[in-house]
Amino acid sequence: MKRDGDLSTLTDGKLYRSSDMARLGCNDCEGCSACCKGMGNSVVLDPYDVWRLTRGVGVTFSEMVGKQVMLSVVDGLILPSLNMENQTGACPFLNGEGRCSIHAFRPGICRLFPLGRYYHDGGFSYVLMTGECKKENRSKIKIDKWLGETNLKAYEKFILQWKEILEETRKLLGETTDLETQKQISVSLLQKYYLAPCESDFLTEFGGRE
Image (cartoon, rainbow, N blue to C red):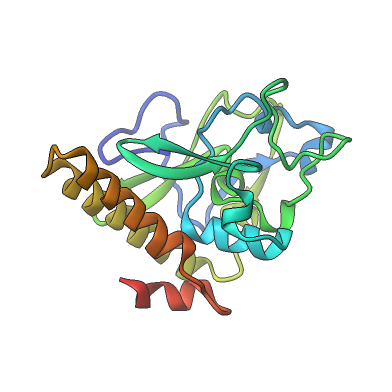
């Protein structure tokens, strides 16, 4: 994910809107699962990811922690990420054929790949990361189609809201050196945004939690 003011040489140098075309098409990966392995704890889950995942898999967030999901420190905050297999480094949701078993409700980072976000002017643009996807000669496809979000406008609004919440929480962490207080701040974030129930429409209800 690209940060404010950091449009690096790792991209093709262009800024894209969701309505733009980019070389993303991979014919459903053609059996490749290279991007689903060796990712460590980098597939960090936001609250919307967890909401979709729990509904799709049919288990609670608490039931997934320690199994398909792990908690780790990300830039000072305790956040969930996919728990890759120890032996193979593979995503826990890859099936025996090396295919994604949660494709319809996969996390946002997976949907985005090999795109990133470049935050600027209070919003963000999409950037195409070069050298990340192993597939050669990818075809052009509209970014909104690639992301596969039913309500992309609401989802993009959520992404900005969540970024702001994380920034504000990290600011709170920086205002204290007391370890117990820092732990309480992180736990409060998990309880409020990951464990709090959401009945039906996450993107509509999310704003009410702030």
